[in-house]
Image 1 (cartoon, helix red, strand yellow):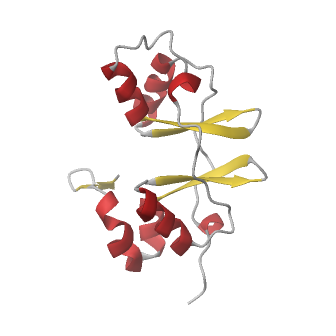
Image 2 (tube, one colour):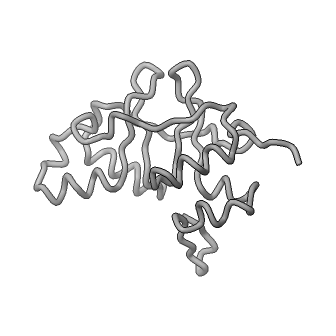
Length: 144
């Protein structure tokens, strides 16, 4: 069986935000596209990642979502992979760090994103490694 690399399964049409965007605007993007993660990009370079969890933390601390910027709450140290990373290696990173999505970076530039669901489609044998991080909504036939 050939080795599958992230480049073969990653999504390249990644929705991103800039660090100066307000949390209110970022939240609208998350809701509009029904996603939970937004890579934060500045001048083409990945500078952070903004998630629903970041938004929830901010709201629970009574931040002003109209004045607070994404840069103020985003995770700055982002775990990434390259297009040449094997799917098995990506799954191991996800399991080790308990994350569902990995930005794919080449020469500092965001080129895609890979998710647990993407990995399970091509490598169902990895279900034991990453399956616990995926929920399944049978009503809508959606894994998340």
